[in-house]
Every structure is written in C-alpha cells, then in structure tokens.
Length: 151
Image (cartoon, rainbow, N blue to C red; front, top):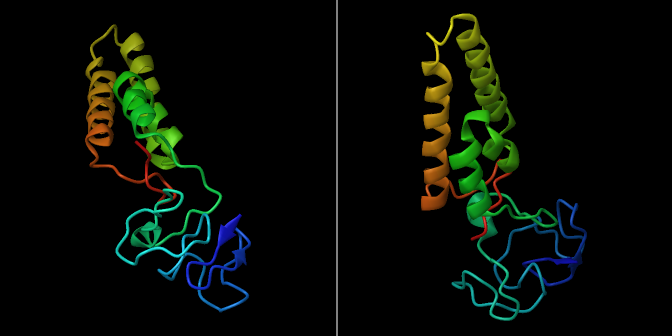
C-alpha cells in the first residue's frame, strides 16, 4: 500500500496523481509514502518505518519497485562483468548487450586468430571490473529505472 506524500491518503501504486489532493505521485514532503505517517521535511528516512523519503531527488517515485542490492551488483560486475551480468541485473540492458556481444565476439575472434585478438575479451573484463568497483564505492547509486540501490 502506498500513500500520498502530500495528504497521506491511500494511493494506487500505478497512479500518476493522488485522487484526493491532485498532487503528482511521489511529490509532497509531509507524509511517508510507505506508512502514511507525518515525517519531518528534512528527514532522509521515515522516523516510523525507515522508508527513504527522498525518492523525489531522483525525479521518480519507486512505489512497488524493488531496490537492487549494491553488493550483489558490485560482485557481479567484478566476477562476471565481462559478460554484462551486473548491467542486466541493474536494468541497463543496452550496455549489458554491448558488453556481452563484444566479449563473446572477441572470444570467437580469438579462437579464429589463435589468440592474437585476446585483448578484446580482456579489455571488456577490465571494463566490468571497473564498473563493479564503481558500484561498490557508491559512484553508481541508482539502477536503470532510477531507483536507489540498497546497501
């Protein structure tokens, strides 16, 4: 159940606006979108339920959308980054397909050329490693939908 952050009335998670007050979904600062309790305007999380209240900073409410794990995404990037697994997990599909196709294409080309072009899969692996470290360090803070990563 989601609540309007302006008037605390129940809000359909797919609604674009609150039917009670007319505010756009995810806007307003008086109430928690998760439990409907009044929260201090400057609070980063609801003092009642611990739900993040600053979703509007990402210009997208994330009602009903599950937050992805920063640890899982970072480890996927470090260990399977050359295949774009971490980007598939985070929802960056175009980047993931690019990494996967370059890596598999490089492996195929390396087999054909007896290892002369083995630098391409290695370079894609370094790219994935760097992205994994960036995710774990907090440089990448949101997934492909703009939802903040959870710790």
